[in-house]
Amino acid sequence: KLDKKILVTGGLGYIGSHTCIELINNGFNVSIIDNLVNSDITSLKSIEKITGVKITFYRVDLTDYKKIKNKLENENFDVVIHFAALKSVRESIKFPEKYMDNNIGSLKNILKFMKYKNIKKLLFSSSCTVYGKPDSLPVTEESIFKKPESPYAETKQISEKLIDEFSNKFKQNSISLRYFNPVGAHHSGLIGEKPKGKPENLVPYITETAIGLRKSLSVFGSDYKTKDGTPVRDYIHIVDLANAHVAAVIRLINYKSKKYYEVFNIGTGKGHSVLEVINAFKKVNKVDINYKIVGRRKGDIDIIFSDNTLSRKTLNWKPKKTIEDMVESSWRWQKNINR
Image (cartoon, rainbow, N blue to C red; front, top):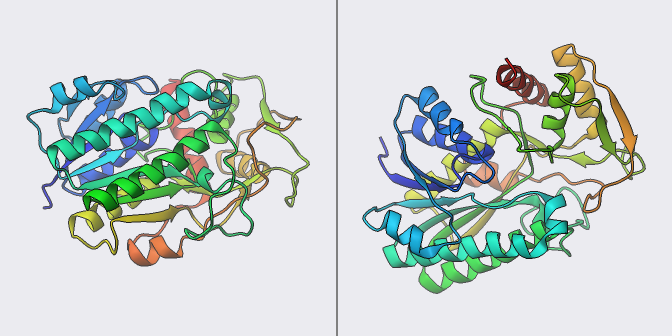
């Protein structure tokens, strides 16, 4: 039993909640801090139900350093996993300042708190959007950052730079995981992606259309330079992604890092187009989906998928679930929440 204490910021969000489950399953002691802007307190109940463990929860806005300090003054943690951030590409284009203030502000406060409490291990939730429009595919960790396609992507680039500088300056071990497109839900059907308002991501859009919450699904653009004209992404099952966090935490705890700041791509290493995902969903779940092709969205690129060699070799992790698993678990979750 590892029995290390992990503070998970944004731990009730989609990725955070699944990660908390896998951490607890691996013997970690988890505390969650979340302001519930993009998440729901019901997720806490679901995590506790799935794991059978009572969790310490703090409702705190991470842009307020005083509140963080007040709440956590008497706590000690071995590792901080920082998920908490606003994450809508579309919203970030409308409100860039809000994204800068929130995403960068909360990270700075977390780093300040870690320095104050002498916590030397950070795992950061980054994104493949840091790469912008890549020059060549698949994207490796060495691929240079291109111009960000959205303010959201820019906040991830800036965050990584801050963590890199901070880690080297204060000799702290940090890891950023650059995820590709997380989809799917926990096999229990008790937890999954539940967007507030209009979904940003493809699969919740598909499931909400399939169950009748939306009249039809909009496919943004059919003139991309891909095999069927729709954008291609590297979709990764949320549970595989959660387990990558467990692997990264174990690396940090066992002092396996080769340098103060390390980055890993977390994807399957292959791409699926929007239409392929829709067709897989229809086939696996035997449901029809009404969709229509509309204009492109700002901030979308043609194609991106990962080279995950480094994470497979170094983190001793590999994705196990298929696109079929992803669409099947998403549908089970959607039917569950609409019972």
